[in-house]
Structure formats: structure tokens, C-alpha cells
Length: 173
Image 1 (cartoon, rainbow, N blue to C red):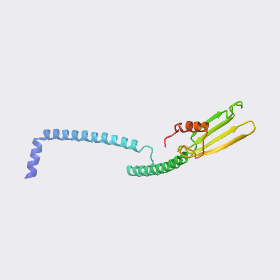
Image 2 (image 1 turned 90 degrees about the vertical axis):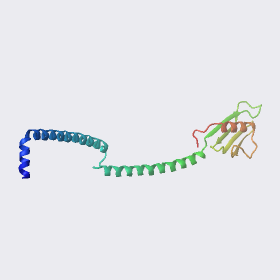
Image 3 (image 1 turned 180 degrees about the vertical axis):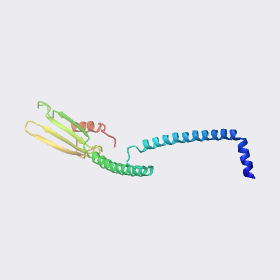
Image 4 (image 1 turned 180 degrees about the horizontal axis):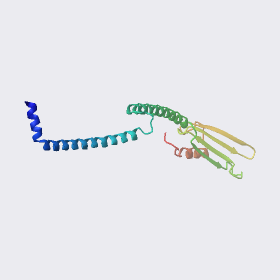
């Protein structure tokens, strides 16, 4: 009974049912095409994202990137440690220098005497000085700690020490 009624209904409305079926098929076809376009776009974005890697999937690529980031972090740590060692070394190197030539005695011609200051970033170092006279020449080395010396300094040694301490450092510690 039900089946007979259904067949009669389809026979009576076959044009409308055919039209509805065609519209439904057209809508489904449009949805399939739309999904294919979206999948194609996603596929091209995926290929662009995976470019330059041997990994075949996103998980493999992410694992590789995490490993690369860990390697870079370890390298950065090592570089920072090496930089600190270099800074410590540079703090003890001679970065401020000054020299002056002068005439120690009025009866001598030329500026044959000299004073040289060699200091590190902490103003620690030495002052070399040489006094040239007619009959002899004397050389002195005076240690400098924190910009001062425990030995008496001549005016020329004081001026060369002041000049060296007034120089700016090549880098900031």
C-alpha cells in the first residue's frame, strides 16, 4: 500500500522531482568544486611550508625545527660564555696609551727624554720613562694601579698618565 502510493506520487510529480534532483546535484557539484579549490590551496601552502626540508610531513618538519632551535640555543650559550672570557681578557689588555717626548735638561738639544703610559680598562698598567743626559741615560718603570702610582711621578709622567686615562675605551665593558 505505501509503496503503491509512493509510486503514484512520483509518477504525478516526476517533473518537479527531476528538477529538484537536478538542483540538488548542481548544488552538490558546486560544493565539490569549492572543496577541491580549497584543498588545492591548502596543498600549495603545505608544499610552500615544507619547501627546503626532507621531512615528508608536518610532524617531521616540526621535530627538525625544534632540534635546530635547541642547537642554536646551545651555540648561543657557548658564544655568550666565550664572549665573557674575551671581555675578561680584554679588561686586562692595554687599551689606553699615551707618550710624550721632552727635554729633561736645558743644556741638551732635542727632545730625547720620554714618558710612556700603558693602561688597561681599569687604569692599571705601567709608565716607562727615560731621562737622557750628556753623560748617561736612565730608564724607569713605575707601576700604576687604579690610575695612581705608589712612586713619585714627574710632571711629564703625570701628564702622560692623565692623557692616557682621559681616552675613551674602544668598547663598553
